[in-house]
Each structure stands twice: as structure tokens, then as C-alpha cells.
Image (cartoon, rainbow, N blue to C red):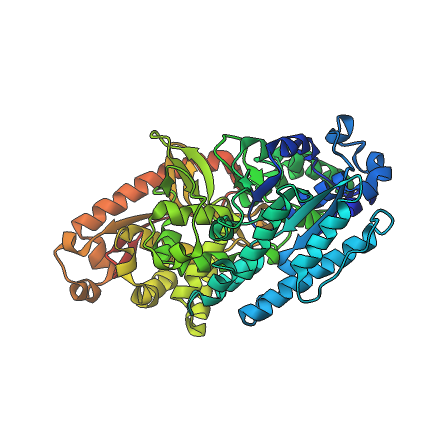
Length: 591
């Protein structure tokens, strides 16, 4: 099986026999939806392949190859009358440079559009009846000349725009700490980006541009240019496009079965691989429907590629091409109140709840206005670092971190913020690795007491001190190389605070499974000062009535969880359990 990791070219994917999850049945829905459409999904989620599929379907120059490309797919069995009836052009704004002043960015954008016009002329030189004029300093005039030439053919014009918000978002993110002048110049007043879309609107109002399909990550830029392009329809939340990007579990399972056959793996091994992928890569839901959760396609293809080559799981479960998504979390954290929400998202017992997703907001609001949780949580949804899981009793949307790969990005961001120094990183890493194999909490707790709690700014997290303690252990212990680990893990009828189950492929090493339950006792409940607490030994603290009660409560919960896990994993489980009580953010006691 040929796996199209990193391939977004539909023509190459089909003609060269790569794995393809068919989504061509949505073409008819897209045609019916309107003529100016916006479709949003997180980065690296297969949007460009959708665009490439549509290009090949509508391109008149590919009419002789329709059967070869689409005959075996859903749309090939019932094609729409518009197939191969367009001259198509594609702009890719991710190719536009983002550095320099606004004049340099505008020049780069014009250069890109002119380059696309030249490619269009070459592609359709046998069809175009008149010369297209290229204006080096005015790409929009070049574009209008292109439309004029198309109007003299029997065909219509279809414009595709890939990553419409990419370069603008990059400019915006780069200026979070230095003002917004460059971005504002691009989108406000007669800014270059706003002017581009005003031209598209004009040419689409009976001037020859028949259809426009735009893809991107968030609606922020579209909100800022809405007055110049108020004819676009956002179809991102419609249920019929829920899975236009992303893999269903049945598709993932089918690919794993083929790889298992090629590798000679037992059915149990293939089933185990599916559980691994479900844990790390599944979990996305788009829009307001209740469709099945989806897998990130780039991550799934990364796993398939590694698994088929080595017949073993990839050691690094996070594809390095998605590691940069941590910048998106950093971006949110830099917004007003964003840091608080990023940390809170790690607590599944208190997830963000919103009535509906915000879809009309601009960067000026993001940078200056005081925004509530629904605003920030909606932006996190568009970026793919939160997803819709269900609705609560009031019908509000519940947003959670999609899977363990994205949870890792949150953890790494907090680790960078709280432990930036080399010595702290090395000390915490050594304590964690010692704990993995020995179960000895002493070095780990000593580090948290003496270092982590000292640098943690309680004022930013005053709403949940117990979460601070859980987060401290999660940040220091997190390792998806060795463990399947999660906070608030559902076990039987309860939720364990932190579980660390050894990855199946790592059980040959001397790693223990771990289960930790945390309790929190405020210092005022002990009627003791921080200095008094520090002066006592752990044995003395353990005998305090409030601490004894919390330890007993945690131990009783752990006993129930142990029984359930042993029933699930059997003899291969090497489980150690820990009841940990935090006395304020000063000391830790455990048993």
C-alpha cells in the first residue's frame, strides 16, 4: 500500500495508486451551497488535498482524464453537469512571504498572483483566444485581464485560494508583542488584502468569475475584510462537510489491516495498533452535528508510514511537522486571559462551555478588547487545539483537548513557561526517569516543592489550586515515548487524576505502570503558616488529621481503580499507585 504522506496533489495521488479516503460525494453539496465559499479546518488537516481534488474535477484541461481520475470514486458514478467545465486558477497564500514592511508584503502578494496568472496562461494556451496582459506592478489588473480572456471562451472561471489567512496570521502573530500596524495596514481601509477580495467580489458579480472556493484555518481575517467581501458563505460548520477532511476510524482500521497483512502481524497486534492510534490521533469533531470523531489525517499517515516501513510503532508519536502547532497555543496564551484558559483546558473536569462558536471577530478585538471564554475557546477550536465533544444539559458546547498528541503540546508550552532554565529541565527529567522505573516519588516531589512551586505564579491560577498540583506532575512526568498517559482518566465509574500505562511496544523495558491520585488541603484549613509547614518532616505532616483523611480517601479510590485496571490488562500490568496530598503549594505528602 502506497501512503501519501505529505502529498496534497490529487492527480499524483490517484494516478500513482496511493491510499485515498474518498470524499468526492461532497462535490454536489459544494455546488449547491453557493458560488463564494469559505471552508475552515486546522492546519495539516488535508485542506489542500480537497482543493486539489476540486481543481482536477472542474478543470476543462483534464476532461479526457475524467474516467481515470474519478471513475472509481463516488462522484464518478454520478457526476454533476459542471465537471470539466471551468478554467481554474489557484492562489496559495502560504507561499507569500511574511517578513518586511507592508509594502514588501504587498509586493510579494502581487508577485504571487502574477506568477499564478503566468501558469494559467501556459496551462490554457490552446483555449484562450486573446492575450492576457501581465502588469508587473498591478497583479489585480493582470487578474482582470485573465477574466476578460476567459469570457471569450465557452467556459467559466473558478478561483481556488489555499490558506487564505496564512501570511496575514503570521504577520499578526509576529506582532502580538509589538503592535498591529502591519496587519491593520493589510486588512483595513484600502489595505492590500482587503483590496484583493474587493476585486474578487467585483469580478464575481457578473464580470466572468463564476465560482470561488477558499480554505484557511480561522475566520479572523475574513472578519477583518468582510466589508470588502461580504458575499462569501462559511460552510465550515455544516454537517455535510464535517468529514470533508479527516479520517473515519473504519478507514484507519482498514489501512492498518492491510499493513498488518504486509507485515505478517497477528490480528491482536493490529487491534492494539488501532487502540494506540485512537488514543493519540482521534478526537476531532467539527460543526454542530453529532458526527463520529475524526482522526487527524497527517498524523494518521505519519503513523501508517512508520508502521508499514518498520512493522512497529513510531518511537516518536508526534510527527515533527505538527510540533510547530505549539506556537498556536503560545499565540492563544499571549492574548488577554489566554494563559488562564490554556492551563484550564488541561482539566477535563471543568472544560470550556460555550453556547455557540464565534465566527465573526477581528484581530483588533483579539488584541485590545476584553474577551470572554467563548471568544478564546472558539479560536482554539479553529486552530485545532480544542474540539467539540458533546453538549451539556443546557445545550452548550463542551470543548476538550482532542487527543494525547495535542495534550502534549499544552504540556510542553507550560513546561517552557515554568521551567525555562537548563538545570531545572535536567533535574526534573532525571527525577521523572528515576520515577518511571523505580516508583520513587522523593526526588520528584522534592523538585516540585523546591523549584516548581516557587516559580509558579499562583495569582494567575487562583481559581483551582488542585489543578496546579495535577499540572505540575503532568508537566514533569509527561512522556508519550514510553507511556499512554492522561489526566482524569475514566476508570470504571470514577476518574483517576493521572494514569501512566506503558506503551505496548515499551513493555520489554523495565518501566512501571503508574496511577496517581491527588488531594489538596489549603493552608488555612490546617491553621498553620507556610513556614510552619516547611519546618515539619513529612512523617509529622502525614499524621495531621486533615492529611490522614485525604490520604485515606485517595487510597480507597486507588484500590478500586487498581482492580479495574488489573482486570483489563492482566498479568502484563506492573502497576504502582500513589496517594499524594498537597498542603497548599508548599509541601507534598504521599503513600
